Amino acid sequence: MQPVKIDLHIHSVLSPCGDLLMTPKNIIKKAVKKNIKIIAITDHNSAKNVKVTLELARDYPITVVPGIEVETKEEVHVLCLFKKLSPLLRLQDYIYSNLPDEENDEEIFGPQIITDQNDEFVKKEKKLLATASLIGFNQLVNRVQKLKGLVIPSHVDKEFGLIKNLGLIPEDLSLPVLEIFKKTQIKDYLQEFPFLQEYNLIKNSDSHYLDEIEAQIEIILANQDADNFGINELFAFLRNRKDLIFLC
Ligand SMILES: [Zn+2]
Ligand SMILES: [Zn+2]
Image (cartoon, rainbow, N blue to C red; front, side):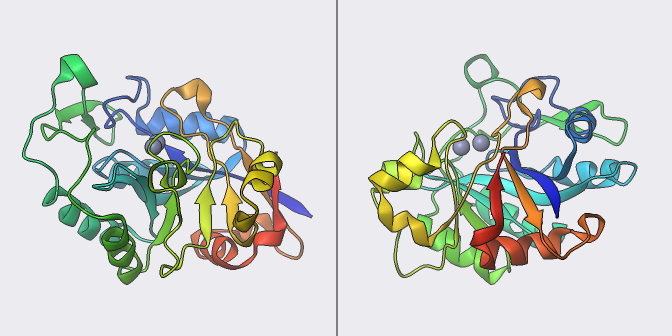
């Protein structure tokens, strides 16, 4: 049995709250050092550092899942992950056209930096990213699923979380996976909300600093080679096989 460490929630320098050391290359190197096999870059309402991360990752033994953390109009954070870059960029266009027409104030929120292949700062995103979009939760889920992406509501039990903010999980949507805050004991949380047993609960680091990058879960592969475990296998695993997720 081989464990595969994953961390599907990491913010780069593009997120205003992300530390200035959170460049794509630094993130990749840190994750490799921590033996993490699959990561996702999930910046707030933007995916403009994902392409460069995918390119840089080719030189390392790691898989990068194209992703984004969208804030809906109900102020719910949602991880949207894709097998490929192009549907993510289509979602990004949709989000940008549904962000309030406001500029980022660096003094208040911090800078939003886009990097290049040399891992250097090249541009700043002017649009305010640390804000709610005009997209409703259901609307977002439908859009991502049409693009064949995987929706994972973030830190559902904390601020900006689905359960915390909406108090429920919409039943008419197919949402097999939920992210629980990394410090919450899943056992205790399930005791409080037993209906969550039917969901696939995962944890990620939600890193904003390099030192926070750490796999919160491992996937145990019974009959599969860890080296051949990529994005397709991960998505199938998360969508279907809740029984084999193992907490670090
Ligand atoms: Zn969040
Ligand atoms: Zn986050």
